[in-house]
Length: 135
Ligand SMILES: [Zn+2]
Image (cartoon, rainbow, N blue to C red; front, side, top):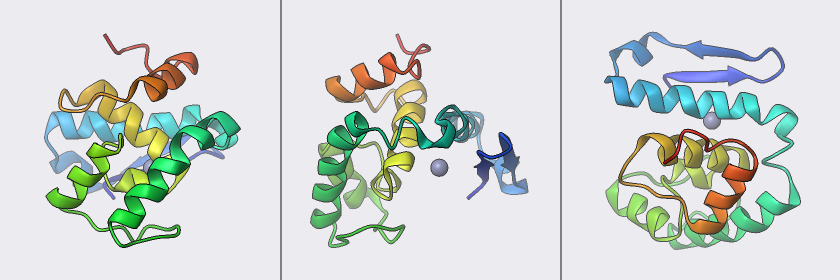
């Protein structure tokens, strides 16, 4: 991971590899990490409303990818990503945890023109003031 965050201290750590990324990728990682910081104590990503929206999608994607359960062991690659996209998530990494889904969705929704969050998710991130930069 080129970047990560500590929500206890609101610190975002940028590794050397971060600075070798193109500007759009860097922006995506920054928005992802800042979303984790905005999700203080996981108060958003652990909410029942988010769980109801995201857990069925995560479960379905992980089953389709042959990686049921939880954890970071999800396949990557373009075929796997297409399965994630077809079920409303921008990446397979978003299927690793509810908090990662929130950070990935906000980052891709704001930065990547190829991804648009499904309407109920878009409403959720807008209601939680995470989508204000979106058109
Ligand atoms: Zn993350």
